Amino acid sequence: MDSKSKALNTPELKALAEEIEVLKKEKNAVIMAHYYQRDEVQAIADFIGDSLALARMAEKTDAKVIVMCGVHFMGETAKILCPDRTVLIPDASAGCSLADSCDPVEFEKFVSQHSDHTVISYVNTSAAVKALTDIVVTSGNARKIVESLPEDEKIIFGPDHNLGEYINSVTGRSMLLWNGACHVHDRFSLQAIIDMKKEHPGAKVLVHPECRRPLQLIADKVGSTAALLDFARSDSAKEYIVVTESGILFEMRRECPEKTFLPAPAEDSECQCNECDFMKMITLRKVRDCLRDGYPEIKVDPEIAAKAVRPIERMLELS
Ligand code: 13P
Ligand code: SF4
Image (cartoon, rainbow, N blue to C red; front, side):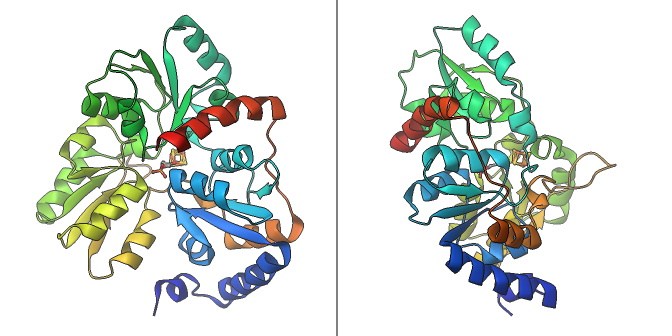
C-alpha cells in the first residue's frame, strides 16, 4: 500500500479527500502543507514543505486561492507575499508558541534600546514583529543570511533563543538574542536520546535547531525540516532518531521506505508528546469546510503588511 492510501485509511477520510479534489478545481485553489501536518493532510496536499519552501511556493503559485495547512504565521507570510490572493487557513486558532513568545510591543522596546543593530527575525513571528524587522530568516537559511552580513555588523536575533545560539555557534557571531522558544522543541530530553542511542547504537541523530543546545551538540545533523529530510535521503545509515515534531516522519518514511525513523520522546513525563498541537488542529474535515465556505480567511492590516513585506522579500533574495 502506498503512503497516500495508508494515510487515507477510513471511508470517511477517502470521501473527504474526494470532495476536496473537486472543490479545489472548482475554486482554483492550491493546498500547501507543512511537514508537521497530520499524515492525511500531507497526503492530499499539492505541495509539502518547510516554512521557507512554503513562502517560496506561495510567491510563485498562479492559483486564486491558497489553503495553508500550517500555523497562522505561515498563512500571514503567504498573504503578505500575495495580497491579491485569497489565503485560507482551515483553523484560524492554529497559532505558534514561538511566535507568541515575542510580543510586538516588547520587541519594539528591545529594538529601540539597540537602534544600531540590524534586526533579524525568524519567520515564526507575527506580521507585527516582521514589520519591525530588517531581514526575516527561516531555519533553512538563517546561517547563510547571517554570514552574508559584514562580520562586525551588530545583530538582534529573535525570537528563538535556541536557534540563535546555534547560529552564533556556527558563524562565530555574538548576536543579541531574544529569549523565546517553541514549546515542542524546547521539551525534548537529552537523557531520552542518550537512552535511545544505547538501544540503537547505529542510529544517527537528527535535530531541529529549535531544540536546546545540548541536543544540538550530540546531533549528527542539525537542520530545518527540509535539511533533515535531505540528510536522511542522501545518508547511508539505516536508522535515525528524529528530534523534531513527529509529523516529519510521514515524508521521511515515504521517501526512504527502506530506513527506520524513530521519533524522539519529549522530556516532560506528564506529556510524552512530540507533536505540535497547533499544527494538528488542521484536519481533513476542516480543509474541506474552509474550501467549501471560503472561510477562515487570513487578513493582514495593509499598513503592517506594507512594512512586513520588505524583510520577507529580502530573505527570498538572499536565500
Ligand atoms: P521549518 O522552518 O524547519 O519548517 O520549521 C518551522 C517550525 O515551525 C518549526 O517548529
Ligand atoms: Fe510553532 Fe513550535 Fe509548532 Fe513550530 S512546532 S509551529 S515553532 S509551536
